[in-house]
Image 1 (cartoon, rainbow, N blue to C red):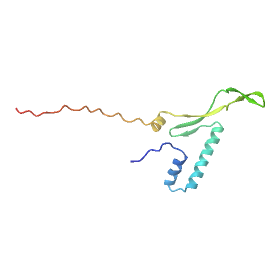
Image 2: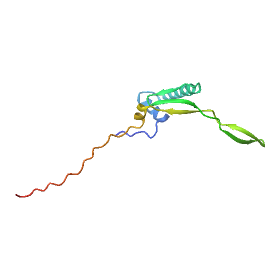
Image 3: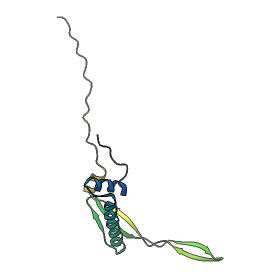
Image 4: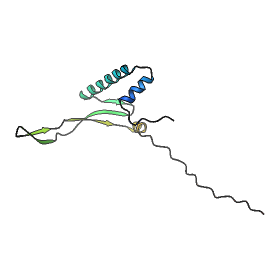
Length: 116
């Protein structure tokens, strides 16, 4: 029985590429290039699509926080953007498959043979 990975991270992806004949170094270079392009696309405001959803850059409000620097109170702002993962119905089915409902089998009543 195949064991499911706990998380799909870089190590898992490198192992999968090695199963298809790539060297470890080549697989790491390919993955780093893919992630670099994804990061650049998100920085430009584009969406990165996968079969199970998409990553998109989401703007949120600046939240002010007071910070002390050189005995003066300064306003510190958080980063204006974050990355959000959005899925559709097909993506939800791929990421979180629902088990098929099991049939309930009620125990049968014991059959006793009687002499007639």
